[in-house]
Image 1 (cartoon, helix red, strand yellow):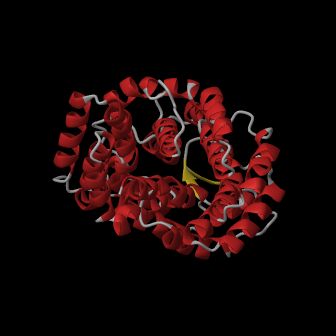
Image 2 (cartoon, rainbow, N blue to C red):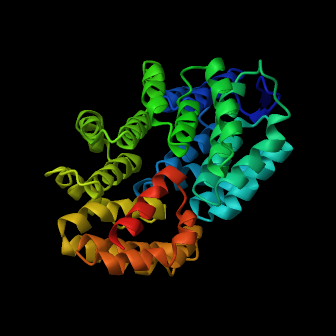
Length: 404
């Protein structure tokens, strides 16, 4: 049976209610809400065989960038792999999902973009494409992938605000700050709780060194973040960066202690990236961070051989390197060496920049700053390949300049 949602997209399902419920779950995903998985489970309780719901569940686990989820992700894929009743859009999703779960990110994002070309109101495909471009080629591709889509939406449409927030961040990463800020503020006028739009405008303020605006801007929206997932912690990290820009290092450290330490227990990659990055920035500015690296050590040791994304795995190397855990560091470096042999998108990234960056981190942290800085500087023009934002990757530029 095929049913349509409010965006005229068809779903293979045995229950008339599931398309609407699917859109509710999708809205939670777009909003970074903790309700996304419970809402999706409600869909699957109604129709345990609904292909798009099963794949959405797999996507959410894949977005966690945690290799421990590989088996359940594969279970989701296998549940739809041989289905013959999927419609054309669902078949395209299945193909993209297959590429993605095998870490062929470039092939996956091409297919998600193709879905958006054929079905420009498929916001799940649009948002996953946005994410994959973020950890891939970056701003221009994010802008291009949204350009076609947005012409098929009207300001009064559900999800339009989220689309503008995505457009804002894409323009910011491309360096078009005026367009980015305009789109982001439009998104926030529609939905003040859109944390991705708040995040996009915050990036503009960061990149333009508008730190005096940045702190109150973030504070003015933080009371909207009820039920937001760990992405709220990343916004606290951004607020700390704004304080650093104002030379208010104590305030940045206060944010770290109050808001960035406890979330580490969730063992989510972005929380460790936030923490390690902020501590090293503060140390380079002469701030004594005391024993704050130590709570990151066990988490990092357990994840130092992650092979989902080069970006977080480099951050997992930082605490062991700074604390002189030779065994963990060696384990991490050997992992990067093996990773360079993988015929995957991230294996290619490891070959081009990941391994030398890992070696440079070890050298800098062990007192060989000039050597590490030179090694990282040699590939500086290609560091963008690890993905992440300009603001996040700025840590590596700071390491190069500080230790040269």
